[in-house]
Amino acid sequence: MCKVYLVGAGPGDLRLITLRGFELIQKADVIIYDYLVNKDLLSYSRSEAELIYVGKQASQHELPQYDINSLLVEKAKKRGIIVRLKGGDPFIFGRGGEEAEFLYEHGIDFEIVPGVTSAISAPAYSGIPLTHRDYASTVAFITGHEDDKKGQSTIKWDELAKGPDTLVLLMGIKNLKEIKEKLIKGGRNPQTPSCIIQWGTLPEQKIVTGPLQEIDTLAKKEGIKPPGIIIVGEVVNLRKKLKWFENKPLFGRKIAVTRAPHQSIKLVGLLTEKGAQIMYLPTIEIIPIEPNEPLVKSIHFIEKYCCIIFTSINGISVFFDNLFRCGKDIRALHGIKILPIGEATASLLKSKGIVPDFLPEKFISEGIIDVLKCMEIKDKQFLHPRAEEARNVIVEYIRNQGGLCDVIPVYKTALPESPALLTEKPDIVTFTSSSTVNNFIKLYGKNVLQNTLIASIGPVTTETLKNHTIDVHIEAERYDIDGLVEAIESYFKK
Image (cartoon, rainbow, N blue to C red; front, side, top):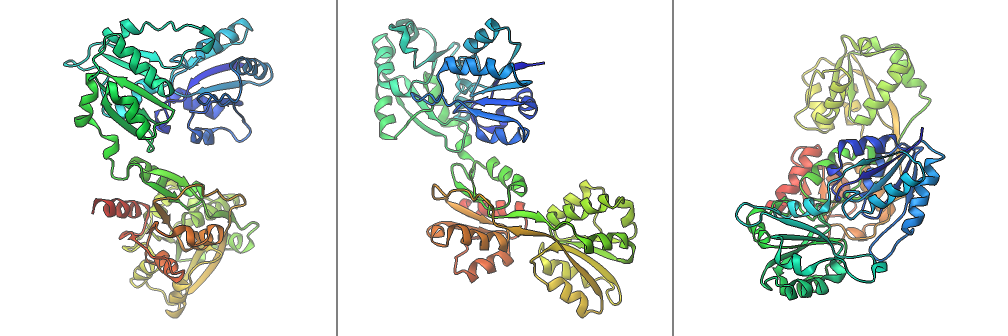
């Protein structure tokens, strides 16, 4: 069965897509998407899904509307679930009605999935309520860019100028001066508070406010360009009290994340929540060492170990993959002490049904040694699955105390095959390991870090940076992702 879903992707903030829309992205066979769709949504699609970009940037259409309509029909006749992913809401100046009509005329089954339109979300992220008991009981949504084929405008500017308390105009940045003049000519007070919101709901959000008669001049002065919306009405003044998005501690800061993509989810989430603009510059690819006979052998004789030491989530993942592959489960670890390096590793272990026996106070190798000092080590056997290249302080301590330690490399790190392009300068670059430091320098060099804030997850990473003569401005007091984000926020608060 074939079906086309016209899905509203929301205004830009990834988290504002509906649950239904997100569900369909994960199921789609084909996704046909617009310019204003947050491209991060596409990362949740199936690996075999066909992704087709059809543009529709202001005054620069990658594919004409009729061709988009035809494409929907063509794909629907060949594949199962077709998602037409549109910025905002499909039926609010999104031409979703035209596409649905075309599908109907060609006998294609379709469904409409509403989205959060920028007409309401961008004002909300700017602290502007479109209606308010004391200031506005009516609101109108207006297109600021009519179809050129009309020949003559069908918008009743005189009635709009004198009618609704709040006017919200979409796609009107290029026609701002003309819109202003029509509203004033129609009877709107030239001093009416007005606002332009560019890239609403995103960390790049930029806002210009002023009286209606000056708003085009102010916008030009501030370099405002599409996409953006225009708001005219007394409610704009409430922004002075109600703005909240820009008050986030890291709002608008461009922060580069150098971790491997699958390990960046928590860091990116925390930074985004603080208002940061994320720049993805992954410097590492994690490659499990397979086949791994030493690891398989240690698992078959797992009962001989008194303790397993995990110093990374990668080591945990590879170890348990091999444990299950060997036909065993967590029952095989009965009676064995489990020692993770920090909260992230402890959390992953808990998700696998293992409650760690210890948690170091310091989330570095020296913290593990502090725990080992309280344990009987002589003649005991330890297992340490870890990265191919790692510090040897733990194994050296155990062996110096008369213990035995099987150090088994279970994964290695490599440079990404297709490194990201560094197209703009970040405000902050975060480093979460020595590998991210060394690889960043191999990929981009040290010069790009000049006049840029450097944030380190802890003393080991800091030492690596200093060995490269790179100054560290921010170092986490607690050596994990939460501690790193707290340190960055604290730096800017000071």
